Image (cartoon, rainbow, N blue to C red; front, side):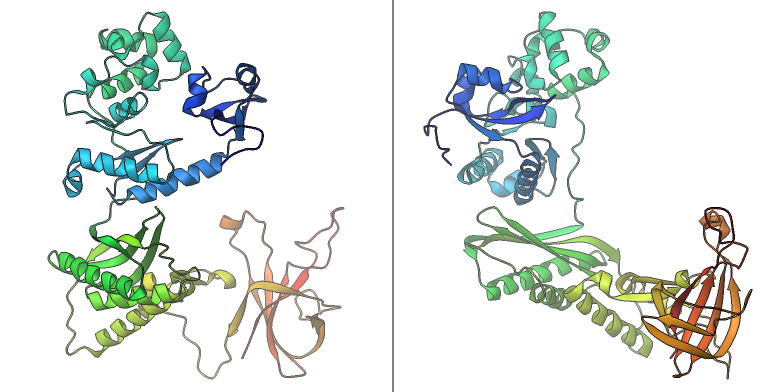
Length: 502
């Protein structure tokens, strides 16, 4: 991209505001050759080079781009960690041979990112700290185990990334290279610069290493398919998923496992990665079920799967698995019914989302709006089937309405029989209702041990109006007992409708 007022070869920098001043946040090689450096004030940089092309930093966009690159790097290893703000760690242990060795993997990664317009510095070493140190000074280096100290011996101490204060202190002490620092005893370095820097130095020299923190947990099972020629048609995508499902289920079957959470990742040739996830209520042990769930999920996507110029890799993983419990399925009809219900819930959840398919579970509380818990059906189907609800008394009207409002709606009551009586009429949703029959009150006190006394006592009434409509209303607070104005004088409590009877 060319900015007006500057030539294509002009040096470019990115600036960010720090301490109320614009300083260099990033720069290209042309700017670096002119003696500019990160952290330098913009005014000083312009004095040295008036033809600078200046761009504002966008930290959020940078983080999003780094995360997208990390998603793309999942094609090489599932263990990818962020090294903010500009780096990534890839644990390629056991993966390099799939790409022709470490050198071929490194070359493939760098070239692919370079084609996408990124300037890449990459290295392979036995420790993550050593690899990061190498990338600050060079690129394309592969260090064998045990050769870390020799590889970084001549690098300046700034390559360790220990911070400006420690780097300045090392230079003032005459320690200009990492080899100079490594020649001193660890106790001397620790006493002068702290244990954290001493540990950093040891890791850079290959003496132990801190494990990386992958962005995503490692799935239990992974299968994938790479293509020499990218695929783009729905038929090929569906066929690939079906074959991967067969392989995945076969791998889990050997260990008696079934999948509860599955993810399909589609890697486009331009670096974009799209992941689709489905969950199941019971462990899945048949590839046909996996295939059907993903078909339902793909058909219901609000943002359809866009192949662009094609997918060069498709991966199917099971991130959550469970041991399959064998059940008698030939004679027990209830087992078949439960299986069919669970399969139906899985298919609906794949289309509209698992959180939208719920079951209701009873809760041990007398607060009406808390007496029922809506939980995802996929994870609580068994509990819902075994739940025990309060039995209704024979030949008695129901104590609770068929429809309970999530939030009670206020009503206007002009007058009522006090202190415990019901209203004679009320206005709800701009309609006046005359009360002809009443049952109550049913007094419900709030849970003072949870509400800190902030909730008022409720008196509930089951009422019927002149039109035959039946309501469940309550008075929020006691007359002359719980509701007061700013002067401490008692005022009339508010009334609400909480539900409707059939």
